[in-house]
Image (cartoon, rainbow, N blue to C red; front, side, top):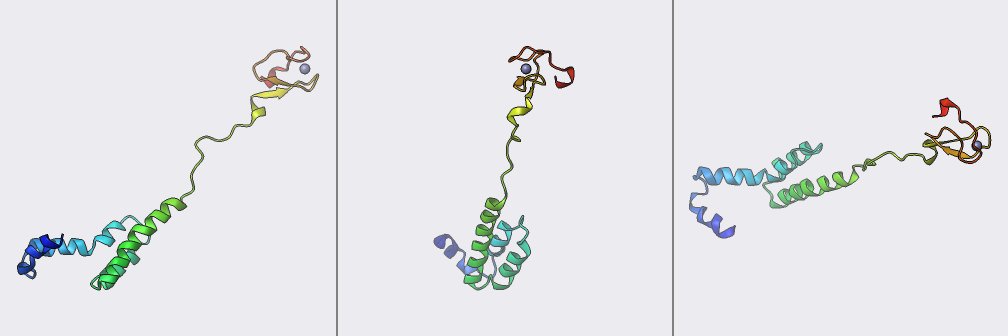
Length: 118
Ligand SMILES: [Zn+2]
């Protein structure tokens, strides 16, 4: 990196490719933060304080670190809603024991189950 940039040193103010590369490198923190809600703050810091090397590093660290925190902060949605155990079955009106939902007669007392329960 250092050696390759030293090759461009005589063309520092003249070479358009080096100017373009250094401009892209200068706005690298803002580019990394382009999809975030705090992009404007990072971009302003990058633009105003990026010429000081410390401001550029702060903007780069901010662009990288805040994005990871935001990904962690997103609450994970449950893959499937929890199903209650008693939903598949109901209680017999004669004996009060739980029966399977598709059953025609109670498995405990043999009483005919109401059609509405099925
Ligand atoms: Zn029963």
